[in-house]
Length: 389
Image 1 (cartoon, rainbow, N blue to C red):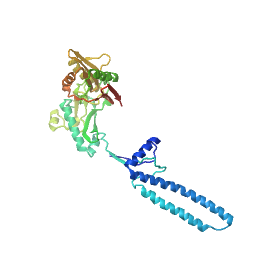
Image 2 (cartoon, rainbow, N blue to C red):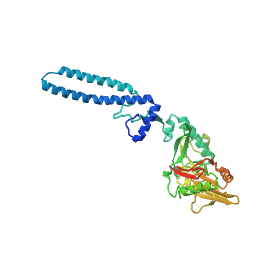
Image 3 (cartoon, rainbow, N blue to C red):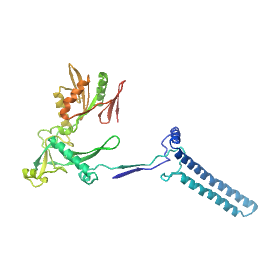
Image 4 (cartoon, rainbow, N blue to C red):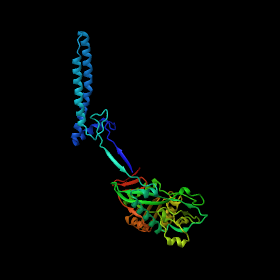
């Protein structure tokens, strides 16, 4: 667990004089008691700075007087010193009592500086691997997330359990854990994803061609413009678990070590003729996260489906597909597993996502369409605007 604490600092210049004046006025309205304490501390500081100067002048004057008359004014000096020190002792408690105990005292603090409240934030990082997850205070949550991931992969027929051969090359896997939160910071769900250690792959043995097709930003703007012309809002669709839906390459055999947390029944061990799961391996039937060729395999599957639905691939941008018939035109832009769709009518867009239901696609429709990593398009009455983070 990591604890992040930000302390109260009052002497940091972050605003110009005009902005500070505005903040002073707001502070006077909303926090009169706090503003009064700041003024009292400023007055106490000014009085404390003036007092030593008077003392020095008084001492010098008395020294000159002593030289001129030759008299001993030690008693008077002592009384004046005691008086000045007493004034200082009276001012110190006033400044201390004016300032709240929880506030940090800083130098050069004036009335133009607006104090910042103390903020304490506790951040619990996500586990870095399976071992950390099992030692984490939320271990039960991570176990449930691992179970859900295994069920999804097995129902997708991602692999088959086989007896490990001596000459086969095996790749390791790792768990990636993530706490999904809502906009207000509350926990939505705990997610675990099993990925292959692609850094262990060898060219020609585990993969051949690698790439991940993404839509050009200019093409994405073109789709947004056509949506405005046709008066049909562009809809954003997402294909969940897209990479594991594609079949692996023909002619390449990829084997994995048994992942952490995977349970093997005694019945399966006896069926495969082994004594423990260390003698087993997973032979991939479909693609899996982490493989170097996973992006290309998904793009190949998406292209096959769109062509089957009657779409044509654009020559200038391979991630743009269009379908034209007597009923109108439909445009589809693919950014990995994110789809940006518009057409000459809402019915054509609805029909497209109904056809894509075979992949379990999810759709969102709003005035603001986020279709790429950090990119979004906002549609207004006068037109549309694009922004990128």
